[in-house]
Amino acid sequence: MNNALPDEYVAFVPIRAGSKGLANKNIKPFAGLPLYEHAVRQGMRCCGACIVSTDIDSVLSAPNSDGRILHRRPAELSGDTTPMDDVLQEAIGSLGLAGKHIVLLQATSPLRSDANILEAIERHRSGEFDLVLSVAEGDRSILKSGLIEDGRFVPVRKPEYCFTNRQSLPGVYRPNGAVYVFSCDRFLENGGLATDNIGAVVMDASQSHDIDTEADFAHAESIFSSTAVEKEMS
Image (tube, rainbow, N blue to C red; front, side, top):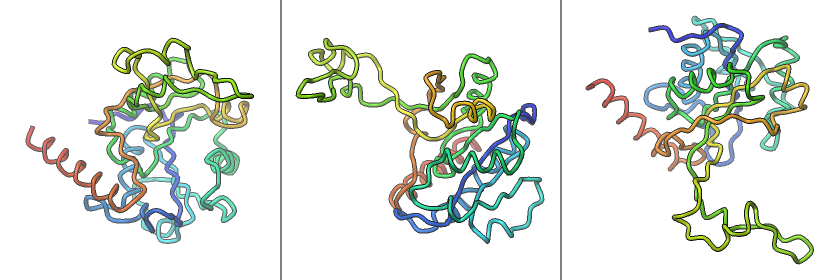
């Protein structure tokens, strides 16, 4: 079944060679394929087009039979502290993506489903939001927290939450890094991803594993493999 949406939505998978937590994690074999390949194939299925922004020579020189766009990321944008905004801005300008919409898929979030991506795209297509991102439920106890400003405690939300049982607090959600959907034109107008008009797609906590260490990698691969077996048996 082809779930591809109109090609104004283009998947974007950013991967770089360096990684402090786990060396070469983006190209490390994960369930039979390099980790990044899972994100690229999802992008091709859901959008029909995928850009891979990378400084990894082996990826840039690999045979390409599915039409993915391999974009060499400049060395100055491949460091540990390079903001994603800068990576996106360079690619939008270099590849002439004005008028397009980007579906950003992090390679280190391999447990998201095609359905998660398609839901995020459809929510963005509604025109209500500048940015749509995926989230997972977080610890609602954060609503008891606050900032200290000139010796004064300033609650992050409502003062009464500081004195409410955790179980009675409203649900809290955190971005899980799996999916971001946005307009290139709006991104350039905003000067980055940050906006006060954000839509959300809720993903299950079991899908919201970000890979940073060897233990993260092994855990995510185990979940991925068991889920794949369950799908084959169903």
